[in-house]
Length: 463
Image (cartoon, rainbow, N blue to C red; front, side):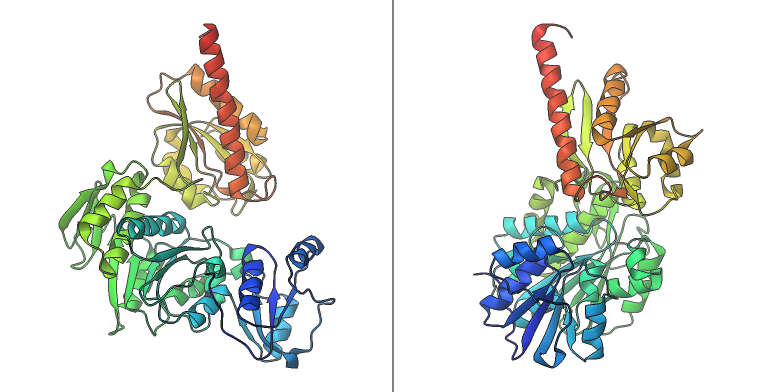
């Protein structure tokens, strides 16, 4: 059964008809609500109308008839319709708030952070599956919140929460809340870091919150940790890969060893899909969340070591003639790419797209890992200028050209130990692709052709 929503006496107006907006409209209709919808895109309105959703003929409304405005997370908070609703004292909320209000007895795990939240969300879902616990996994990752099944008090919703989604919660209180890290992102939407941090901190709203799990290796998140420790009603668990002996109740990872209060739990170096310190932090946070809800340690360890990984995030696509091809298309900001570059020593790096930041300073410690950079999209010239004199680079323009050029050079120099062609763009995809998934899938298609070409050449005896 698809998730239900509250029943409103007045009209529920849905703003934004992407995946989450369409799911919200359908769930509201299935719960007996009178629904009206709007999107600034004519094509999206037409597609939604074909699915039976009533579309407003104009973008001006009789607000006395509307009880709630359900905004999609991609809609800017200063959109005129949102401003009009607020001026008319109409509640503005998102799909998370609707799910929580309609299913108050269920448990909720919320995962947020600038980087790592998708991997951590998928990992917690994998743990729950191994533990045979009733759960639904989605939100910002994959399935929209209001497409998830209705759960009872025995069930747990595992929700990846973006800052946009958290901005649209009013009263929602998670059972377990995770904040992994904070670095500048989406500042075109939030204007400045303080507003971005404030949105992230909504995940710790009091009420049903029992456990807060925080990665404390960054200044911003450490400050949040210190704030939360003042709350007497809350179990606050710090997670760290650096401050290993500073906290009595922390979950730490030291050289791959996952420890809970200094007791060794497992060696994460055996978890093939979780390479690098950033993934060790994700694993530690997932472990802490699962333990907080009573899942036994042995089951958690089995799940950590068997986790298959997340598509488009450090995804091993193929190994061809000893060269690894890694799809990290989900790395849409500089910090995420830095985490990827830290994992490899001999990198043919494919980067670029629509840049969120002109600065590459965060990457400088890893320049020695990069043998050659192949630059694409709108950022190619800017990145090339930043790398000039420090990292060999080529302005390729397209992903296809960059991948083929990177592969050619990697094959020619495959004696380099651990040669890796790494797509980790450090940019959004919107200049050339609909989203990071389409970009990642395009990369995988190009690599598949390269693999086939190598196979054909070997069969013909030319290699």
